[in-house]
Length: 160
Ligand SMILES: [Zn+2]
Ligand SMILES: [Zn+2]
Image (cartoon, rainbow, N blue to C red):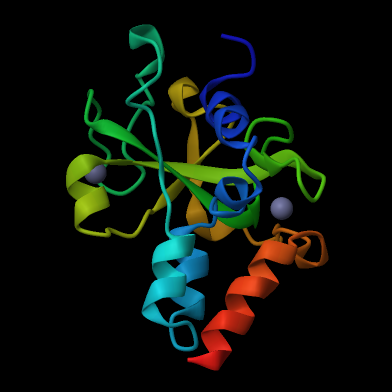
């Protein structure tokens, strides 16, 4: 393990610009839901899962919605807010975002129920340090001018 779970997942996906771009949070999706059509939402709604990590790295600490711990806490969700601990969250190689984005984790039940997180991770998820999600307020998002693929999708959407 080098950079912790979020960093590993990020690196695993960063070879494809589109996949990288899909690391948008459910909160971001919810905010945009009134003006984004279904196909675009599906495109953006991609969650990182810890399924393919080594066994000793699947402990993500407690679910940020219900507080339970265990092997089914495995969904990592990236928020469009700056996290509490620089270098320990998500980032984007394509538009040069540092790894400072806030993340939270959900158990399978909360993930499937689209439960709202009450907390975000401080440091890597498995460190199991959490703060209330309301304390995370500084915007943190992609530089869309460096994501031409997003504009392509938006244009395709307008034509429909
Ligand atoms: Zn839960
Ligand atoms: Zn980006």
